[in-house]
Image (cartoon, rainbow, N blue to C red; front, side, top):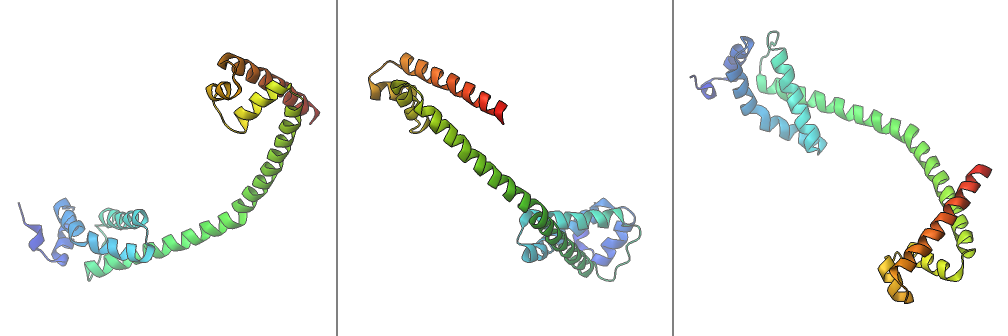
Amino acid sequence: MQAYSLYTDSELVDFLKSGNTAAFDEIYQRHWNTLFKSAYYLLQDRAASMDIVQDVFVWLWENRDHVVLTTLKGYLVMAVRYKVANFIRHQKVRNTFITENIVPEVTQATEEWVLELKELKSVIASFTETLPSRCKEVFYLSRHEHLSNREIAGRLGISEKTVENQLTTALRKLRVRLGSMSLLL
């Protein structure tokens, strides 16, 4: 077995051209850290930096037959910088697209959703006023104070089964009310 760490970059490239995977592994081990640091310095994004370095090495392996290099390290560093520039350019285009196309739609949808939520709360509040007093009290404690059936029963001095029945009644009536409203809409 040859000790590829003893060879120069130029000699490793010659081995690489003949498909020598051990030479490729040595190139990878020798230059990966420098290339990663170069990409990370510019991007401050670990995953993107790793992807870029990986892409450069994949390209090097796939195009090993045609590679004409004077300095391997200089070529790899420039390839990483080129990929970083493309990544940044792509991110700017993507961010511009999102800002111009998606954010306004989300904002409009959110505003519509907030209005619908306010309307729904108003409907539920007016519905709650139509409930009998004990049922209204149980419903309020459950939905506004977020108490469990056991806590409501303890606070009101009634059984958990009564709490459950009152909530079932209130929710059944609310579903009917909301169902009839959706028919009107």
